[in-house]
Figure 1 (cartoon, rainbow, N blue to C red):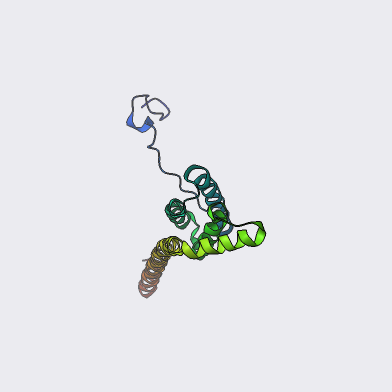
Figure 2 (cartoon, one colour; figure 1 turned 90 degrees about the vertical axis):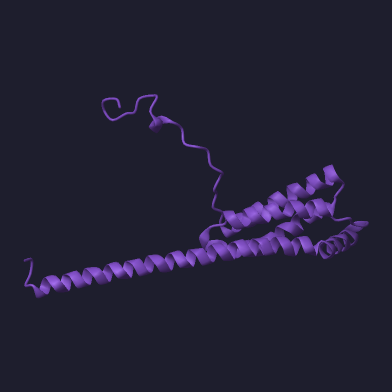
Length: 170
């Protein structure tokens, strides 16, 4: 150690910390924007690179669902299973085969939603399971903290009662 408490350049304490994966926390709105934006980009890429393959699009939807469920804030956990189907539909605009005009495009979108419902339900299920596990863990942690606080309060009350029985500080 150098004078002043600074480590020498060869100390283990000066080694850089290992890099971690990003851990953003998205609000409910942020989660929806993330999912819709990523799925729009993936839908466009699927159209350009794979000719609009719905299977490729469905497979790419699953990691987006996983990230949405993991990155949403604790207070907004219930929004993740709601926004991922919206994101799926947003990106499906590029993948769906549509006919001529607006009505043909809408029929193509409805058909794609119907035929790709398995990917939609699967991704929503993945998101729902992850969010449910996170919520259960959060509730257990809160209960544990409340029980520990209650035990500490009871212990301090018992100590105060014992001190008052002895007649003060003595």
